[in-house]
Image (cartoon, rainbow, N blue to C red; front, side, top):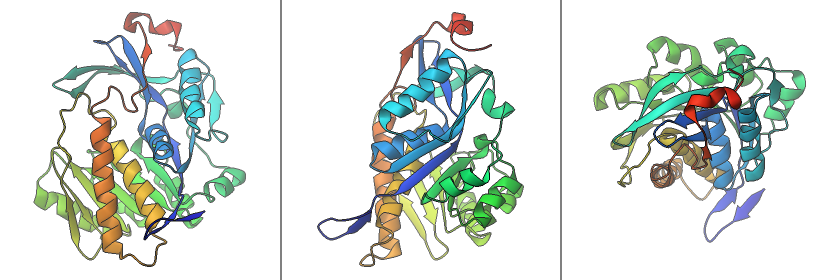
Length: 303
């Protein structure tokens, strides 16, 4: 659907997150917060006005029910998610100066045990979206990612901060958008990574750099976007919120023939920085929390 604003033709984008649904358990608060890269993207893009969906694996424990409930109440389509017997993924977390410190985790629970093997019907469903958001945590092999790309599915991929040249070589040829967490490397090296990603096939590559300006590259020029400085209380989900806002805005305006690609990327980076700043002042990835006793997890998770 196209919507004409004052000067811009905007499309309501359709975005599906394919990957993990987990909870982050904050020992110091005795709270748990739903999250996970693709879960967050599905939730945030819906909040930002997209038609969004989540394809993941929900466990048959109480946490699995909560993870489902949060998305359904937000209006996210979970009709093509799977349900399996097993444990929901969780991480035990403490905060130090607003940054997350992981104490313990069980990887991604049922997501690790039951990774997606896409049926023909699921492929047809994914093809109805403007973009599929994936990450390393999606537990999809390079071959499965390549298979999605061969079906003309536009892929956004989060390489996280522990990416390697081999990862870029294997994945970049099949994606449209590549996102990297680059706070641990120099600006020069960040630019090298982004250029390599685009050279290998991505349309746009973006490197967030913590408190430093985000850098993007589209094969023609580099872009820089200053962060919106706020007093962060929790950085959990900050990168996911940036991805969500960039994708939602870029996919909504790319059909507008009155604007240049440069303007669309610049505006989308601005919107992403603005939205990310609203997320880091809340607890948890999406700001939704539940009381929990960290010492009694077996009551809500199939441990």
